[in-house]
Length: 274
Ligand code: SAM
Image (tube, rainbow, N blue to C red; front, side, top):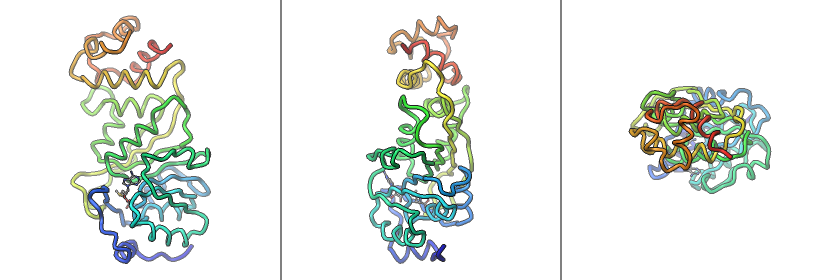
């Protein structure tokens, strides 16, 4: 493995000032990056999809861990720095220039299983998260998701029923996968520092409950949490058969969405799946 120049030097040499429009907050602390790369377990020889490598801090850590990395980056200013990194780790890094929201990840990874690691801007991260966790096909091709979010979003993903953080993201993340808070990251770890604290969420696929359509469950959570202050008998009016199904399976229609456990949402979706 070649000796690499410090990241700050790479950034200065390639003129990679952080772009606010692209949500760029870079990580330079190699020890922290190695700890992040270790979250999914041993990556040696494994396929990894990294979204938004930027100047390549996390990418280096993944390559050091022996992963075969495919990295999607839409800021072409970063490509020369990433190309240098590819030369230092021959055959381990493939860089794709583009918008990760517009790319078919399973096809890009050649239909082989892969771990996902990413430090993305908030809006893009949430959109990809919803996409990775949605759909009827399960288990997915990804073996784990290790994603940096604003801490408040990370808390929503791992939230339990009963609190204000609990909502669509929690149900989506937990009904057929396990989601846990893996690490909190202080804002001062980033350059430039963002306004809020960050946290890394780690998700692994679990078993899909039988007889439940993902589409039905998604529609239910959308309606229920779209009007989270209302009783279910009101918020679920627009979902055909849902209010009757509540009665059949013994869920009080006067309850509100945030009091329903993930298991209860699954039960309700099962009653509506035909
Ligand atoms: N991974 C680097 C790090 O941790 O230092 C950079 C993180 S920075 C928060 C986010 C990166 O994602 C930026 O390099 C940005 O250009 C890239 N990015 C933003 N939106 C993207 C998208 N839709 N597809 C691919 N990359 C994107």
